[in-house]
Image (cartoon, rainbow, N blue to C red; front, side):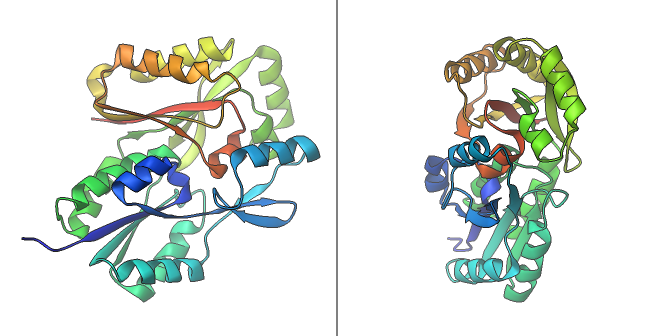
Length: 284
């Protein structure tokens, strides 16, 4: 019998539901949401809805902050007491210093492998769950890392924000661009490319119609889609029925084996605001 064990962990930006975290035995370490000069632990001391309320009340967006080296040291040291190796997933190194800080701590603890997801939200979650499945088979950490690095290049992670208000307040788009998008009812597809967020196709119309077009576009070339798992991840929808409509539209096109609906945490919510929704999956 193989008693070799690998613990799979992640930072909070993986946006996996509490049910999935419990089912797969995944421990997470929270990033920080900074509002009014005070840092709050993502999902522990603050929620996305509380961020939205603060922005509405003050007219000011906050920021996010990385996990520091000391926090990683404590976390990894504790995890290593229970397993032979730890594989830890971080948000893209292009978006945060989490990866760099985790690598410093891992070097001190030993037996810790840090995976730069080159992604965010459930784009990370897809990788985390696959790593868990491999770990349960008793596969060595180095082999899991190799498989996940290959998989990371196939993740299709995109989102549609209802508007650009939060991106404008956070300095990620100009006021002119946000005003133009509002006047023309433009809703851009935000996609992750090479670890960065970039603007893809631009849609016009109501959020409901845009989401249907978006689903059709993302899943149109079905032969290239890995049908094992899909995430429908949103940042809180003022019209909750849109989530069910998107799920129905996804399954009408692509018979995914596992369909997960999750709520985005503070990181995505801080950047994109409410009424943002994405369909995330892997390509073959």
